[in-house]
Length: 412
Image 1 (cartoon, rainbow, N blue to C red):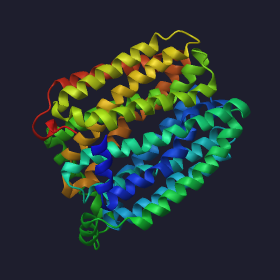
Image 2: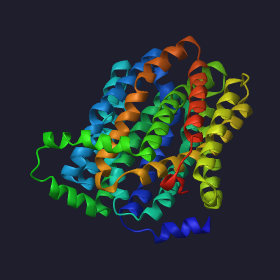
Image 3: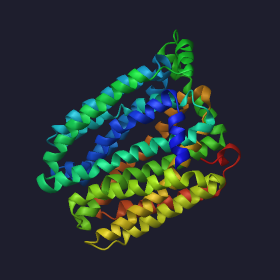
């Protein structure tokens, strides 16, 4: 733990600015995240409608994700991150705050779809000038920063118990607008354009945007030639589908089928965060001596076990769900940072922006149909999205078990 804290104090540049400002986004996000599906449900949006909103959001992200790599190179990591963050988060939080029905949520998710642009530019902003040996520890701190914000979640749970989901969520979204906007401004002030960003801006200064899109074909071929990138992309795509389904329909399954009180939904993220923080601060560095493949396998097996545990959960048993959350948190701590590091280290630095854009496009394209599909499954039986998730975890085990070689074996 001390070594992790010491690393943060010695960190400099954009990586430090990104880590330290992340709670300004993470705190409000985690205040409203446990109740998003219920908020829509209480405003008359049913399971299939929720699925449609998810799928439309994903389709918009597909349309914007490739733009991300091009405009990040053209206009700079720092500038693009600031402008697109303001569009894709500040504006939607205001729409969500005043939402009345399905159409308001649909409009918000369409605007929020631009977030895929800043996903590329923000990653390049903190990663471009960072030594490869520091990538793993910085990824850990990104997770730690976000997890610490989760401890604010009981605030929303407390007020939901007293005042109900809808009025509390409206206030939280307004708070989110203020906090997130402040984060974007502060990060812009304390960050600088990366060396690689300045090089790409100069190289593309006189190149039309349309011509820059033509280079994606060669970049995609570059991905296909790299076993490390293909494996990382496959795992992230499968996990993206799983996270889409489980994060969206867990609240409905827990409250409507297992009859868990709505206010308790804010407690589960706290439990999850506590477990993950214990891993990231205390145990993570001790696991570095083990092969990346073995640790990832353990994480996926534990994920699958947690999903099976959830599927056999009895009604009115919050302790049972608490055990599920602990198992899922341990699995996430084992798998997620290593999967992010595997992807980051496998990507060619010279084409980081466009490769990351293609990565995100494939992940979103694969998961997009599962919004409506999971909504239909949930409408039939709310256990079905989780059964499908269990099957997909078993597929991930097969992918990882085929072996990771060379740079892929570098542990976090």
